[in-house]
Image (cartoon, rainbow, N blue to C red):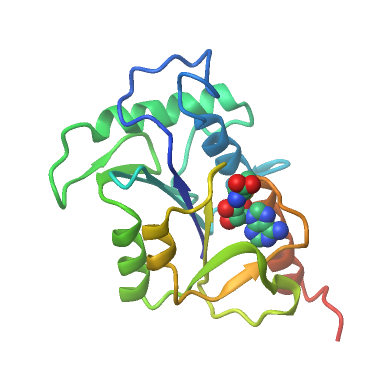
Amino acid sequence: MRTFVVVSHTAPLEGDFSLSDLPGGAGRIDILCRCATEAFLLSHGIRKDVRLIFAIRDQLIITLEGAWLRHLNPDERSTAALLRKAISRGAGLGPGEVARSTSGITVRAGGLNDVIAELGEAGRQPYLLEEEGLLLRRAELTPGAAFVLSDHRDFEPEERALLDTCPRLSVGPRSLHGHQCITLVHSELDLREAGWTDG
Ligand SMILES: C[S@@+](CC[C@H](N)C(=O)[O-])C[C@H]1O[C@@H](n2cnc3c(N)ncnc32)[C@H](O)[C@@H]1O
């Protein structure tokens, strides 16, 4: 199972946004849509062994599970509609309550601290993706690794503190968009799994 955690600082907490203005009125939810596309979609199929977690504004956690995910298409608008439904479903949830939105998508109240704590309890190592980290190509990863990245904004100091002990990994020397990092992580892990690596 590959896990990606995307921290969103600006996505909406209410599902009343327009699908016609994803980068504006919808608080850059287009970024999350692209992350979902890259996390799950193959040319003709879906990666079933992937979990994608959006931690939105430290208040809402949306989890997408490849094994059960349905209705995910390559266009941003229909993905945004899935997320909008999940955000609406999450409104008013109390602590510990989990609601199913559409197939493979659940929502609950919580923040990055909950996600990191749960990864720890499950024995899964979170790796922080950042430009200055150890080159992923050279890194030995623990099984069931989770990769944490930010949206268009830098991590907040409190988020950095939570991630302070996580090993840092870089996918290359240039600062990339989050969805591009997900593609590169998948590529590297695909190559390793297929034995297409040097030495
Ligand atoms: C668009 S970047 C964040 C914006 C950037 N911090 C800024 O304000 O210019 C989104 C995220 O992708 C990840 N990222 C970008 N380039 C990376 C790289 N070369 N290696 C690893 N992670 C990277 C980081 O987690 C980053 O927070």
